[in-house]
Image 1 (cartoon, rainbow, N blue to C red):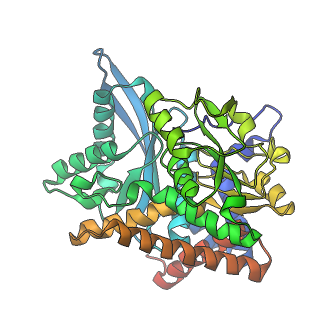
Image 2: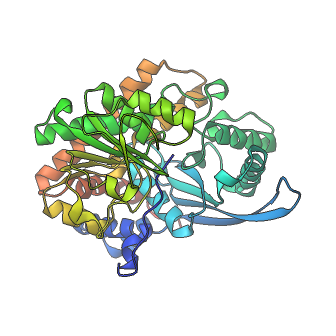
Image 3: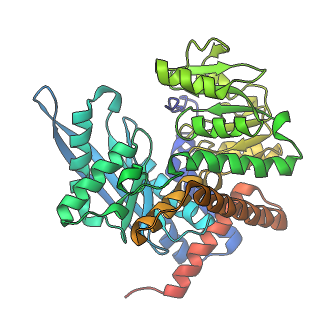
Length: 428
């Protein structure tokens, strides 16, 4: 589950809340540092392909409803496009564009051979039956078939999609090409080619990033109070893994509200309560509060693991944490990040902290293509090695250039993609 997206008050600059413009601002700063010429900048900031599709679905009551879907392939210079598919009422093209670009930089910063893509369908899964969701998923897959493929574009789960959604996509694609093609998606059930460790991978990557960030502040997990926004595969699993490492998780949230206990929550008990009751509200060993208040709690670390635009110019002055580990995509606006940087707050950016999921998606894709599957211990060990090495490379770049981790991550990522472009040249 996720919290509701923040919305811009009428007095705010609307551009701050446009995720594509926010991404472009970070891109331009890194491009200035790298000295990229304007032509190369235009190539790297412009999506390679954008597809909008109309999806008629027969609803359970017999009427036909037409949904709108998108798939954006931002860049495939370094390999097939990789990126999730989200089902949500707020989906729009600028959001999908931004998420696709972030996937390009995310894959690049951890140096895995994928480009960036993203998909979305405007719908409210909470109001739809499993039959309706299956029909919508299969219709969406059929509509974007021409740009999918293990060597072209490999989707994955995202907001309000999961293993079952990926199974429907894999089956639909396989029926069209008349061959079982497990490598067409990642995040699948184990029984049809999924990878061990995939479900926990994004949360585990957040935990690894948090461990590395603590070293920069000279803190220990047991001395670190953590506020986790979200309680799903990223927030919930990340909180559980951090709890096991000794962090004091003082707050968790879902779309209905937040719970708080300054002495620390028993995260396993919280997640069991959430599974049984469908929401965190009413958990007996914590007080309830509004989601808007959660990020302003007194703590050492915030893990925003819900959705974009949660830390903005409207609430940044009330943020007390000195460490922010971005589990979600784009949870801190570019404007808010600049203010936090000036205050000395360390932000581990989403394109690094959130990269555990795509890293193990890469592992799953590799395993599917070679037909040989690794143990969970091997998956977790290789994930940790990639995440730690990537964090250290970004931190070294930040120290060398006296810049933030966010700026350094974009510099590392964009430089890799620009290098490939120069080597490959322009197809004429």
